[in-house]
Length: 206
Ligand SMILES: [Mg+2]
Image (tube, rainbow, N blue to C red):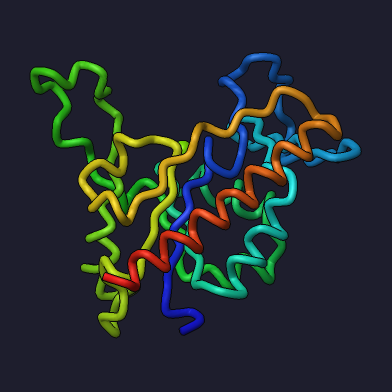
């Protein structure tokens, strides 16, 4: 049934391009948004710059016509909120089932262990069981491993989840602001939506 399935989306590297800190950054005065022909370059108050994937709002609207949609970013609340407000219109923001940030993640438990030297001190994980266990999000005990899909460009953040609940995407990188890139972006989002549809079919069969 419609809305009985939940898609949880990462932001940075999945739906938005995040520029390297301070590289080519001008000193930010405020949250400044200026439009090029096809892309938005958004300056956040913390000095970071981001650009959302082309066609992002249409993609989310299409997902929302079929599923419940939520955002789970591992950046802090301080950073997540301005990003959300910059890239999504109000009617979309209101329809997210939840917008989770760093506080809802967990520190990667393998930090410092032998064989996990690539795990940094600040690295986090996103266990979908945290959604299942949330008395706020899951007060009706509706959400479980049979109806949730989480999407992220960091496989390490998802590695403690059942693989069938995870969709790992290549990190979204923007090199140009041109029309050619918009075609690449639309193909990416269409492909991602197909992956989600197919995966839900698989999950509900089990
Ligand atoms: Mg990411």
